[in-house]
Image 1 (cartoon, rainbow, N blue to C red):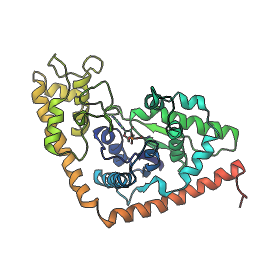
Image 2 (cartoon, helix red, strand yellow):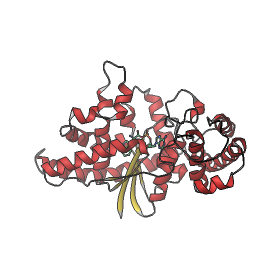
Image 3 (cartoon, protein in one colour):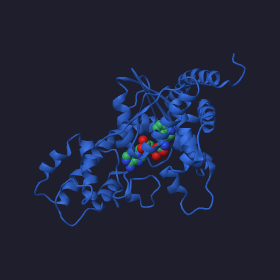
Image 4 (cartoon, rainbow, N blue to C red):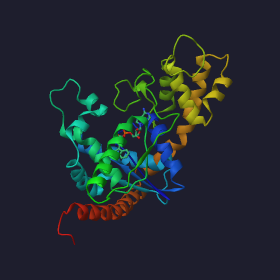
Length: 328
Ligand code: TYM
């Protein structure tokens, strides 16, 4: 069995990009692997957070994990800050990283653009992410395409340390979906769908009302050609919608192109609204059921204990190999 680890930041706007790029894979992987899924609240504080809202959002995402089908009997679900090994390992990795490689991270470059100074946590964000992954001897990390660079630096750090000290870490592989790996913004299909974009119609959040879903999809940017054809370069808008449709309805893009040959964007969008509303309805219902339950708290508590047991073993090995502590 392979060990799978992934995480999602706690925000109130978990959207179709997160779902199709990551969460859907989480569910698919849990039958044949040992899966560990985390809500990464320590990553969230790399930008300012209101403490009360942060905790609410952490529970929102935990409830969404369960609502999309993550089964706590099969997978470990927990909150990052409940396991101290993440911060401990992060420091050890920091001491084996270079400012040069961190400066090259596109996400850091984007977030610190035009600023004289940026928060240090934003700069070292990829190291904490590497710690998350390496702490659990992870084989496979299911993520969206936007995390590719972060997986690469994690592999680099682990390899560097394995070569310098005793073999300490498992080298993980990223798992990216071909279709749906990068869901683009509905209002501007050259940018990725993002939780922080100002225009709420740029994304569909998993808990959106059907009327909001309808509005966002009907307003989605397409092109003037009026032909439903997948061509990311010349027709990024309709290609993005085809992608979304394809993953939600579990139908290939080619099949959809054939199904909509001779039809217009209006028909296609109307059907996509239906497909989306139908796919999200059971998620929303399950979410409402569990969000304020004791069951959710119990699952997270037990998850943290199980995660901590694995993390402590890794930290003991790390300390031994690095000569940290008393060695007993
Ligand atoms: P986050 O919280 O931004 O996003 C969660 C997951 O959703 C994917 N995703 C997308 N996939 C396709 N299209 C999009 N438009 C889109 N937007 C987001 C992300 O790739 C991600 O898989 N750094 C991570 C969280 C993290 C993590 C980890 C992930 C922290 N530690 C360890 C894996 C392993 C992040 O900010 O994801």
